[in-house]
Length: 385
Length: 156
Image 1 (cartoon, each protein chain N blue to C red):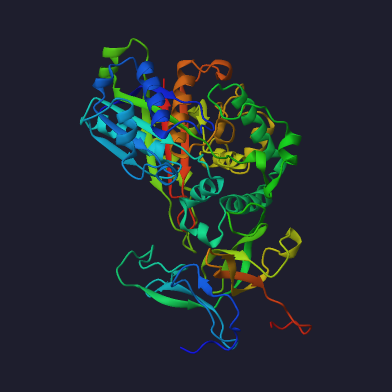
Image 2: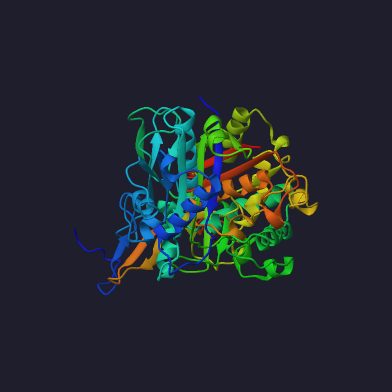
């Protein structure tokens, strides 16, 4: 397999864009990415286009990739549509990387494009719950998170206040990110006093609806040299797993841990080598659980990690410098590629006011959906300078 | 089929949220049950019913199993958010069933407050209303409620 590098990334701002179409958002992200890569658009040989809830919430009920890329000026090349709930974007990136690694082509595009806002909030809410067929029984994702969190809090003495600190950190990071949907820094009291969704979760700990798009262009190291003198970012690993079913007599290994183990092995690194990470904090407290699942700290130590500011932008292992899902926004299928864009900017030293000090290795974790009793999918990507 | 005598004619039609998930009693003498699956090779129990055992991964080992609907609260959450048409707050829970499966369910029959339930509370299956549809039917699903005990401490 050939080495794969990211030559360009780009995104739209995330937010509520009732007046903009899905194709318009996709076009903007694609052309931002092309300009960042500095390549002729006709050199892109294949495209993977991730979209999830837009199939329910926009007028496009099929082949979104072809529709969106037509608006961006692309015709004729193979376009593959990808759906994997919240991990759709990373799944598209993985497939684009495999096209290049296998030698099938030299330049590939991965795009995640999503619209959740429509003129009917109830419809949007129903679509958001549709990552699982259990929504019709009254199943609510926040309550699921809350139940897992309550058990975990009891086990390790982790507090709601520590969860609030995650939201405070990420809102501060988001305030430094011009692409973020929410740019108001929150205080601990504001987070704790916001409406209780399902204890320990409060409103400001939860990600909400968003529109937006993000993209990356990948190619071989040799091809990259043709276009730019800039140091390319290596995709050292981009690993995808699906959830498992819990068997009564067997311990359940979180899928984040399984995906991370594969990615660390492929990249030839360990969690101690990660300098910056973007993780899937659909609810802010999940970020702490993910520190442990990714091995960024030992089991039960994530509470002290946030207390000591270790994952602040200025800390030793900054997590979610972009603001994460709650502050930056979470347009479902765009999220994974926006995480990757953030890590690329961080590794290049282009992250402006939220720049982490000289990172060399970055990681993204992007999980989604729900099947029986586990997430449907999880991708972990490791990028190296 | 005769109309069940427990349902007055004026009562709204009770429509199961999904076919093949549970048995809805037609009279007061009957008990509801969940329609699950059990692997004839390894004993794995699933609800909803899986047609292939995830441990054995062989064809034809999962047999239909009627699950009595007795269990204990494993963990629960009072959820103040709800999808359109559903009631909020709700009690969402994971239940450890006597038969071995751990399943998600709504809990009914008590106030939605943290004081109403404990981890380990004994619960039983009921078929209850989830919401009403556009035709004014009651959409019903499986739910669990705490088992009331009489003064002698015996289950009702």
